[in-house]
Amino acid sequence: MISDQILSGYLRDFQTQQGLENADEPELFSKFALFCVICKQTGNPKSLDDLDTDGGQDTGIDGIAVLVNDRLVNDKEDIDYFRQ
Image (cartoon, rainbow, N blue to C red; front, side, top):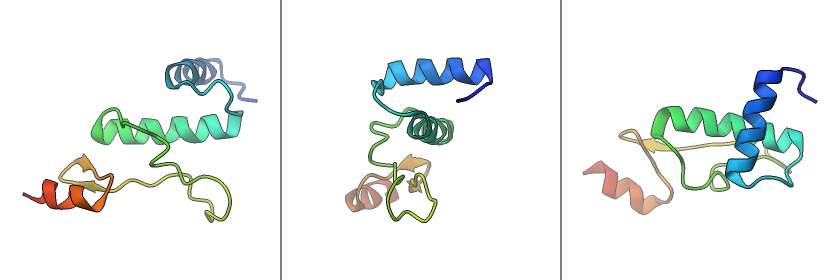
């Protein structure tokens, strides 16, 4: 359980805004951290699920994003589009 009241408030707000009411605290914090990093670079991502790699055989990597010209790449067609 996170003991910092300010961080807990941010997590609760994020949980509500993203519709993650059923997420446990470690999953919620992982998505929150990913959201904070990606938003700072690109703005609000369309889907955190596309960037979240947490779970299973991920070797400790919780999320990954590819940026081309400061834009988030969702599939390989985006690379050709953003390259122009």
